[in-house]
Structure formats: C-alpha cells, structure tokens
Length: 294
Image (cartoon, rainbow, N blue to C red; front, side, top):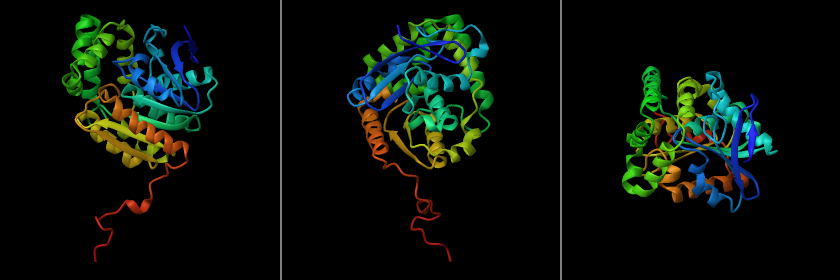
C-alpha cells in the first residue's frame, strides 16, 4: 500500500489516477479517500488525481497521542502528501473537515495551491457559537466511543444529510455503511483534536482578506450550518466564486456528483486558462444602480 509520511512520522495512505496538473481531494469527517470516487473517475481523465486518508483513518496511521491531531496537522498533511509525490502546486479540493484543511492550506501555503475548492465549510462559524459547537463535538465523540456503529449510522442521519437520504437512498446507505464500518477510534480523536480546537471562520476574516489564490466556495442550500458561512467566505476572499447547489445538503460531491463535477471542472479550466481574476472593486456598490444618494 502506498503511504506518504508526515513531518511527525505518521503515515498517510493515498491513491492516485490520471496524469496532468494535480488535483488533491481532502475528505470529510464521515468519509475517507473512497468518498471521492465519483471525482477520481471524472477528473482523472484530464488531471493527475490524488485522494488520501487523513490521519486516524485506516489504512493511514491512527496515532494514540491526542497532540497528533490538530487543524495545523490536518493542513500540513495535505502538503506532506504533495511533497511525497513531488508535486510543487496542486488544485486542492476539500469538503467539510477537508474544506477547512483546504482553506488553511491556502492561508499558510498559498504558493503550493493552484486553486482551492472549499465545500461544505463553516459549521460552528457564527460568533458566539463556539461553546455549542464544541459541546456537540464532544457529545458526538462520546457517542462514537460508547455506541460505535449505531452512533455512526445516527450521525449519517443528521439534518444536513436527510436530503441525500431521500433523493438517493442507495448512495446514502453506501456512504453511511462505509463510515459505520470503519474503526472509529481515529474519528473520536479527530473530533477532539481537529474539530473542537480549530479556529472558527469568523476568526479568520483578516487572513481571508489577504488570500490571493483562486477559490471556489461550494455549499448545498439545505446545509444550513454552512450556507451563511459560504457567503462569509465569498465576501472576504477576493478571488472567490460561490456555487450553491439547490435542494442539497452537506455531502454535495456524493449527493449531486454531476453538478459538483461540472462546477469544479469549469472552475479549474478557468484557473488553468488564467481567467479567474480578483473581484472588480466597482462591483461592491452600496446601491442597486451604483448611484450615490444626493
């Protein structure tokens, strides 16, 4: 099995397909590298595609030390995989937990990113929501510890995944059972080390405003915790666009793979052609017509 090695010695399992400019996919809490299969098959026709398992997700290593899990480690693991494969710059595509890691790659390593696709990013982003968010993470971690498979299936039935369950019961069940069938120790450590301790989005507004990497923000319109956060990202990243997929929840790459792939493909093509510019400041107007009030 191919593995890259992170700076602290943790081994990260990865798969790759295709050739060309590199696209690396970063998965969500309830997924792994296999969650990106619809994208690996589609984009590997034109790109070199990489999907890997985060630390804590076998066959990547599952460190026992709580200090091995943090937002910084999650960010740096993306770079470790690229370094291992001798990739200087890549399009970085992430969903949810992976979307946060993608944003942090852009903030810390802008020279390593051709572009950023930040999907389903923002749960717990609102000012004043910190304690509620962290309490929910701890409650989820405890449920995974005590209830195992039942807790994982319950997580897959969360409010932001109901639309997926209703429109594609077979696809939803495949994703839910894949999550429930994995060892959950690493998920618990990820919840406590990465999710609970990460900086919230509104705390990153100033660095977002300095970010100059082409960025596509994506969300489902029924992913309520991430919908307003998507607007926050759009308004503060000058070279960003926002795609809202209608009647969709959180796992948009699986729930609506055709719409997701089409939007990302158009974005990557524009970036590669040098046609994804910064927002023209004239478009930020106080009125509909741009006339000043006399």
